[in-house]
Length: 274
Image (cartoon, rainbow, N blue to C red; front, side):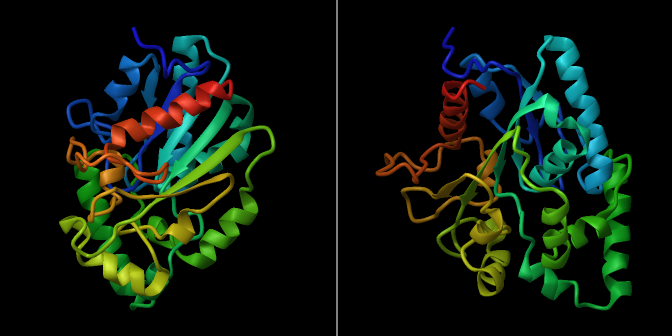
């Protein structure tokens, strides 16, 4: 078996907002099986899709403890997408820093969003009504403690700034961050409306999260595809289950197949001793 991704510690993949870890519809597409084929031991956070940071961190903590129990490992490597990166940061800063070897965040809104700031200026009753409606739907889909309004609030720049003060990058856990970007409103039909809006308020983005917001400690650069479309927030978790283009990357910042990107990330963690 190829052992390029055979890490010292197991890999815990933590999803973002709006989706759940499901057995037959994997949030991460081809990525987990690709990593496992190369030797990685892959597990999932299993938190709610729209739970609060605190509530979801408790669920991730239980998942992490179960991974350590199953594998006998002392720590895990966390690979987190979008809001999952914030939940992982909270977990590490609230009693789990000694159980996490590394944290890799991908398109995580570390600094919030000016776009969300603008949207939250709507009448509070309207925002709360939308949040309640979403909570009902997410509960039907399996969330135990949906809290959409709190999720909206953590994405504001004000709340994000306080979160960063309360949850700094720990000295004893290796942390790194990645950002992706689309190249136009036509890069991904899923984000054809949101991309120009986020561009106006926040600059370069993946259709949801801006490059500036995704930039955190040990920033590894802005990645996109060698084609005209770029890479969207959904592309990053392999929504379409296929490579972006047959065109080969011309630099380390270009990605033709997202599965290969994750292999490279994990191989680097392995080389660093994690």
